[in-house]
Structure formats: structure tokens, C-alpha cells
Image (cartoon, rainbow, N blue to C red; front, side, top):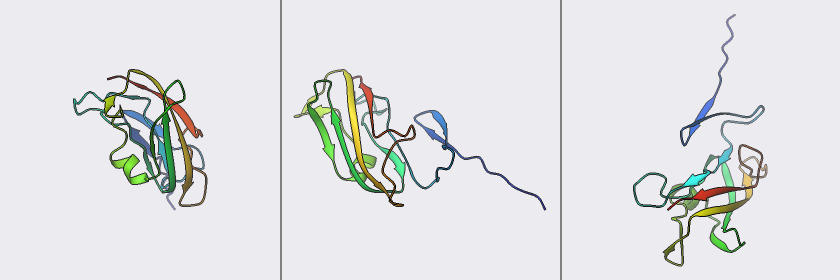
Length: 125
């Protein structure tokens, strides 16, 4: 009897990321570490990437702790994302923090591939 093994790799934003040991391919979440809302068509929106998300709440804060973006819609975060604007104006370059809460379809708490529920990214207009 011949055994067949599969090794699953995901390619996100140009990075190859193996699934963590014990993870199910159907449930994962990740966020970019850089985005450039300059209108060139590349990385113009800060979007969530993932599968198997059920309940979702994403907040983005600037370095002073001011809320810049918030959504409870997984579809919005995945399909549209944050355009880098605060009150209609393009946010200044710098480090921003994200915080995610919610659950996967299995009932497990949301966290990204690095087992984090929060992280940071750089906005470069």
C-alpha cells in the first residue's frame, strides 16, 4: 500500500507560509505588515486574509491609541478593508496597531498565524 502525504503551503503577500502543526487548512487568519494606500493598485487597502471566520471584530489604532478604523463585518475586512483614511483624509505614515476578536466556525478564538490577537503594521502613503 502506497502512502501519500500532502504538505500545504499558503502564499500571502508574496510570502510562503506553512500551516502551523495541528492547524486546519479551513481555519486561518492573517494580516499584512505593510500597506500603501497611494492609489497605485498595489496594497492600497489593509485587508484581513483567512478562511473559516464566523464572528469578527477588527479595530485599528494609531500610535496614540486613537481608533482609526473599526468593523464587525468579516466580508468588509476581507473584501474592502481599510482605505487608510481618517475622517476623509489620508492617515499619516507610521506604525498602526490592529486588534481582532471573534471566533472561527469551529468555535476557536480568532488569532493570526503567529497565535496573536493583535499586531502592528506600517502605513506608507
